[in-house]
Image (cartoon, rainbow over all chains, first blue to last red; front, top):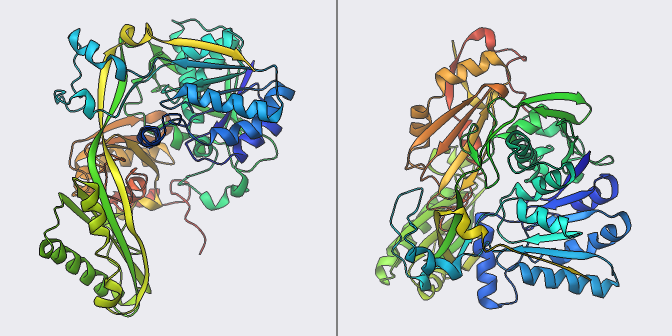
Length: 453
Length: 120
């Protein structure tokens, strides 16, 4: 039997979920999913500023808090915190271990997901880099691409574990790979145990977003979730006979039930009967959920089909800049005043001949989240509203210039300003390009390195 | 038949994959699931989300958890790192769908088939 716990669901998640897991989870592994598509873009920006960065910075906090548990309790950590610089993440963990006087642990990295260096080679071989979602042909030059990462599966992590790693750090692996790898390693699953691998993928999928499986972001009776301030992250308990239970650590809040798990079950997987991962194509259409105890749900009925011949890769390219500004108005006629600001700003864009490709207006407190679908409310009753206007520009300078339109509104615009914010927000926008690469092209370049601290 | 907003009969969760938004809609019972299958069609969901969603809307039936799964293409203003929107990750699309009204047989409007709402 192996108990695998979730420690992180995204870059920026709390450390207390992982700490509770280490203290109360009774797990052999804590796995961290740190990467989203947006995260890769953020990490690339970090690396542009400083080549030693490009991994998720919270790995420092993770190492500081959990290395003692690796040493004392023998808990192994698996994380894709490496982002676009797994070596950098490894160096940071090693640095922390040395600083804390912890020795005798092994840190492994798996690399090879970065396909940027081989883009030309792939094209010379006639491999299409057309966007597989839109079919659009790839016409960008390599210089325009900021990062290009293929999604690796669980096997490079398994290899690190075989070589004795206590901590495994990867770059772009699939969200579920971190969780699947220890199941493969501990229970001896084979590369063509499709049903077992698919079960592991579902368990990993249920765990990868941390608290989203245990009562967080739950749209049922969320107000009844116990101790939401201290939600326990999910644990998969998997037995050699294929029995699998999702539970959570003792002494933690949250809830594990069919109701909380089913929302995460369908999250971001597209077709539930055909969930494509590098290790297996999973079919969840006959998956069964059964409550077998308090905060214990048994999962069964998952089927797997042979792994796909290609790996998905994502490339990011610069797509101009976003400039934005925000200003608040108070009752009476808050919304009318905010709408006047929208009119003023749009006229000033013309007046000052600012070049913007797109403009987007939202009224925070009125319709900023549901946009045009939000139901109108009694405008007279609005105590306050913030107008947020964002533009897409080609250059950073134009985005900065747009933000400068906002401060003068305090003196030159409608009355009763309540707050000016974000007017100097300038963000580089990134476009994403998804491609499918024959897996051998990537997998033949995967490298494993395990070193002892 | 009664016109009922989905918020009283459904759970939902949504999120991003590139410029696509994935949305799960969950009924409490098999009977209500059958109503969803009839009432919450991809065409209606596409119409509901106009003008936010520009691309196709497809639907998968997931009877083992009484759920419908919707995939909304070209939905997020270019995708999270390109979007000018506050909800650039599409996480509120689930609640946005809960605004939709559907026809529900009167006999299903009981606690057994409906979603609890927070106490006032």
